[in-house]
Image 1 (tube, helix red, strand yellow):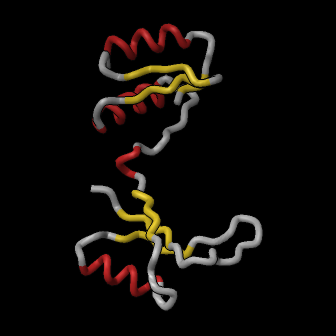
Image 2 (cartoon, one colour; image 1 turned 90 degrees about the vertical axis):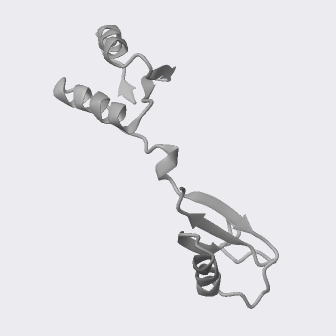
Image 3 (cartoon, one colour; image 1 turned 120 degrees about the vertical axis):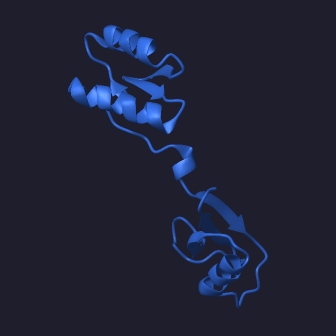
Length: 120
C-alpha cells in the first residue's frame, strides 16, 4: 500500500507502463496495489524503495495460515493429540487452541478448537 503523495499520479502512470496487470484501488489515504505474481511484487516494492516512497506491504493470502474451527470433539481431547492426529493425516498444523469467551477468557462450554494450518 502506497501513501498518497503530491505526484502519486506520475508514479501510478510509471507503474502502469511497467506492470499493466497490477490492480490499483484507493483505500482512504492509501493506494492499494495488488501484483499478479511474486516477481512483480518484488519489482514494484523495489521501485518504491529506489524512489524512497513511503509504503507498507500486506502479506498475500497465500502466505497466511488457513484458520479452521472444529466442534464436537470429546471433552477429554487434548490439543497435542489433535495436532498429532492431523499431522499423521499429512496436514501441516501451525497452531491448535481451545476457543475461549471473549470477555471472561473462560473456555467455551462445548469443546471447540481453533486450528491454523499451512496453505498449499
